[in-house]
Image 1 (cartoon, rainbow, N blue to C red):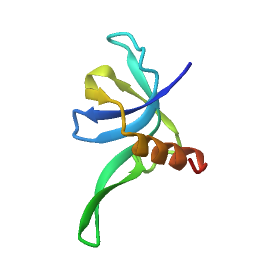
Image 2 (image 1 turned 90 degrees about the vertical axis):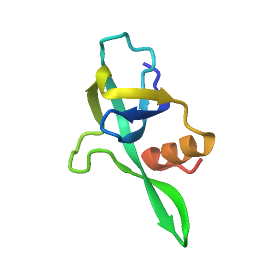
Image 3 (image 1 turned 45 degrees about the vertical axis):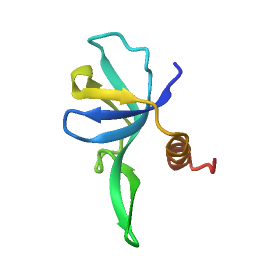
Amino acid sequence: MARDVVILKLVTGDEIVCRMDVTFEKGDDIYLDMPLQIQTVQEGGKVGFGMMPWIMAAEDQGFTISENAIITMGTPKHGLESQYLSAVTGLAL
């Protein structure tokens, strides 16, 4: 099953970047592969973002959520997608 890198905004307010199957059927639970939460960070007076594990204490690399937990889904900017893939694979892209 092919998984695309997507950005999700959840009903909790969390903004997640992960890989998932975007061809899910309405009402299906959705599997998030290696989700990372996007956090704003301030460094040297500039605001940027960083990524950290969405669920910090779990050994799992994937999680299933209800479709109802998602407000919206989008395509990440190219730089963010490359940064995410580097973070989860350990490969420099």
